[in-house]
Image (cartoon, rainbow, N blue to C red; front, side):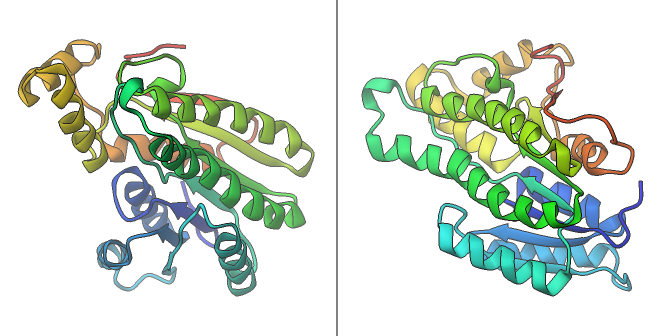
Amino acid sequence: MVFSGKNAIITGAAGGIGKAAAKDLFNLGANVILFDVNENALKKAKNEIELKRAESLNTVAYYVVDITNNEKVKNVVSEIADKFNNIDILVNSAGVISSLPISDLEEDEWDRIMNINLKGTFLVTKYVIAEMAKKNAGKIVNIGSDLSYCGQKLLSHYVTSKHGILGFTKSVALEYADYGILVNTVCPGPTETDLHYKDVDMQINFTGMSKDEHLSKELEKIPLKKLGKPEEVSKAILFLVSDYNTHITGAALTVNGGIFMN
């Protein structure tokens, strides 16, 4: 795969799956534009990505963006479109999670999860896809979850947000098919990210299990008997945003070790 001359925006790019996708896209020639709210982590990610190809012709840029802020997203996307002339790829990887029984789930925490996982994906897509439509081309990948398909205790708010990603993806794929823009979802299972391990710590507060017991039980449910790696999820993203994908849109690609099969 070659992405020379392509411009890619990746949200949640300071860590986890977002950073893995940014690294891969950069190493394959794309100009990558990193979005996150954590400036220090963004700077670190930028330096880490650039170290891989110190003499490359492509660039890494970053923007400190609260993706739930409509005006900020609108202005930053406009600035990027002016600077880079074109936005070819969008990876909506920003997301948050927390584990709480619904009886303890406060309205502000429900709103926080929905705002980042759903509203943020909507806002960035809204402004980026308008730029893509001007050129009648573009690839978008949203990050769902194995929990886009099922329920789980303690995660009613997160599960709802990830179910929403599937519906959003399908609807936008239909709206922009005439523009040649392909919109898909990648659905990881449990993956070796800081976000996952933080959620494990939250869950064991309610289950009474030790962390090792929780992780062991988690692995029992995965046919391949291992957690995914961000780099494995990234490879699925790369295919969907590459020139190899010319006829897949509105789809969900599961990268979960077989924990959910569709």
